[in-house]
Length: 514
Image (cartoon, rainbow, N blue to C red; front, side, top):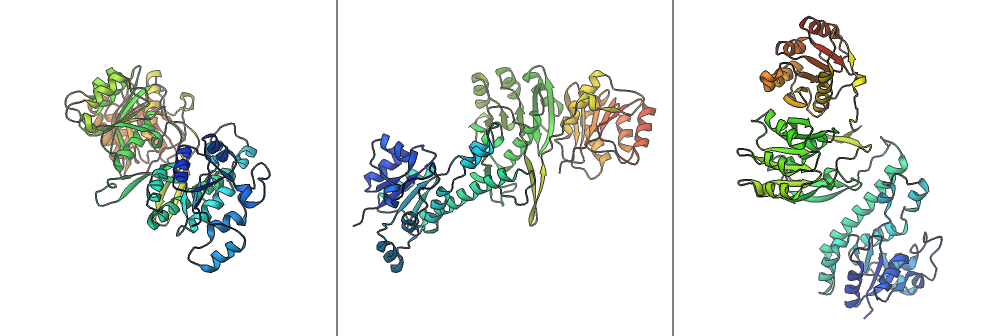
């Protein structure tokens, strides 16, 4: 009986020696190339060089080594087609039964800020994807392994003689996804365009979710292969029950908001909108202000903090009468983590996520699914400085009001349009979101702020089409308004503010969020 052969050539060498040793124990001959062969020999394993199989040495710094009929004939020959087997036998080609390949680290390479085009090109794998695709196409006879996580499954099944057809099919599907994502990453990098002519999105499934927005909807969480440290995709769950679709969506919104601020910041999100947000000298102060802004809506909310959570902050989180479903932060000190995990009533269920750091601000795209297509845009990275504020009223905001106007402007960016935010002393007091007309959003935000609206500031994500919004704000005691401007009726709103003694500034930019 012909000895089975396995071809191993990987860039990710995690658990490789153990896997290869298991194959040898099961009677496989190991074929390999370059650094993989050296690694296996250093582990004490016998290895046959691919060059001795092809009769040609590795060429051009390894650019050509496996692109040969002796390799691809051995992979593609159908065992159930006599003509195929006769063809390879006539050329003294023995079948290859298992291929373990993962590709040059292209994405890791181009993620480096100092990478050159030449370096990127040298990390485009050619032979690897070819072997993966050949083996995957012939999954009826060949086992293709691209992920070290599958080593144990493969070895376990091989102990019974061979992998099952269903397993080989699943591994082949995973292999084609692997090469597809790889090609997509190369296309995205080489295009050098924010909006390329062809869009390929390399995402891999992180885990299945219990359900989607509703129990009758299936759902899963897919992670962008180039997602960086500090993104939700790379956050570690330290404790708590499984994350849900809505948890993840709200966690992302909360995390993006607190990462807007250089100061200590905390927020609470419910149904994709912040119901509390604050900045303060300490995280505990920021959280307390965010918590107390809306005692009703905060119940069952999602918390985000942009500083390591300390014990004092944790004690404010676990106060009697509170309930939260998840929290994300750059880290937790030991006492804070213990307090959060052991909160009587809900601590064991609280999903605690460690993002490792605050969100990186690399350029990126945002997209929304529509029937039959995608809407793609740059992420809203617009930032506003105090010097950008254009005062359009007779009264100008004072220094404290300017700080609150900039704070409210960041908050309103994260509310669903039509969006209004009322803030004072670095704290969000009331929010109006997702309304079909702007004055309704104003009224909701003012109602949420209550008496706190007096002397507060108000931010609008887009211009006021009429002066009814500013009129309602002035009647509630709002002292200053920030809005984009640009309406045909701006003069009406300015005149109203001048009559009521309200300062108003224009930004020249809007923050629609749908």
